Image (cartoon, rainbow, N blue to C red; front, side, top):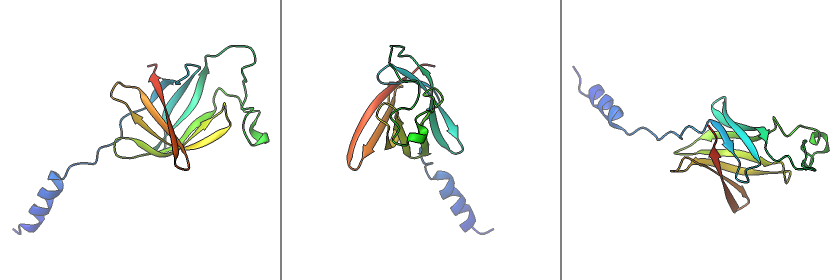
Length: 138
């Protein structure tokens, strides 16, 4: 029996598996405490939509009024997809887009689960990046 196939199998079995990104599915309270976003799989990627608006003050928009596309300004905030296309990376979800309905802006983004269980979402424009911290609601 040849030894080469056994050696190849041994090396494959001993190779460390790539670290999969952590499970970020669930309901997340936004950093400002004014909304809840549900993060769910969308195919092999991760996406997120607003499922609840907690800010009930008068004058708070109920539609996507800041969207730069006038045809989209009538979209309800509840149900609005704000995270899309996050692909599995090493220990994080990357290559996604985050949409901020308060500003009507989209950002290149990544998501990473913090040690304390919170979710760090980092959005970038050119080389300037900013992160927010969301907390799991369940």
